[in-house]
Image (tube, rainbow, N blue to C red; front, top):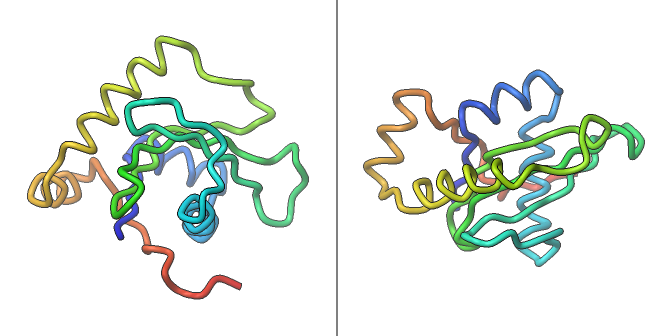
Length: 128
């Protein structure tokens, strides 16, 4: 299993303090069926509670996934910043999800080397 963040998502997550550990925990939840919404085209919505904080500091993330071995964090926002995404944003994310999920291993490695994608730990380690 491989977990990735787009460059834009990575910048946002760093700025907001959303750790790779929290992202891996979210993937573990997704793998057992704790999905908040299916938005179509391989896009799912996952709420992530930031460790040590109340509900005001939770996040909403959108991922592209085949729900087997590839998970791409594409977009995120703090719950207290906005309620949802606009229709035009979803259209853009559908195009991005289609491109990401269509990548073979060579294209993924090229995107990693260019910094377009960032790979994070696969979440298989024990999380306390």
